[in-house]
Each structure stands twice: as structure tokens, then as C-alpha cells.
Image (cartoon, rainbow, N blue to C red):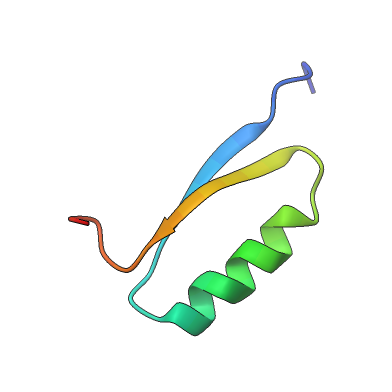
Length: 42
């Protein structure tokens, strides 16, 4: 890649899914999880 990380915001109504997705995506050095939210309006 070009040295920049892919920045991701995880939005899901399930706290379990948000936590699992954060764990999985955080393992990739090219991805940065910048935050999570329970719905898109928070």
C-alpha cells in the first residue's frame, strides 16, 4: 500500500459485533479503527 492506513468506523446495534469487528480489524496493520457507534445518528 502507499503507507496510509485505511480508517474505519464500525457501526452496529450489537455491542458484541462491534467488539468482535474491532478485534478482527485491529489485527491488520493497514487498518485503523477510529471508533464505534451503536447507530449512525450518535
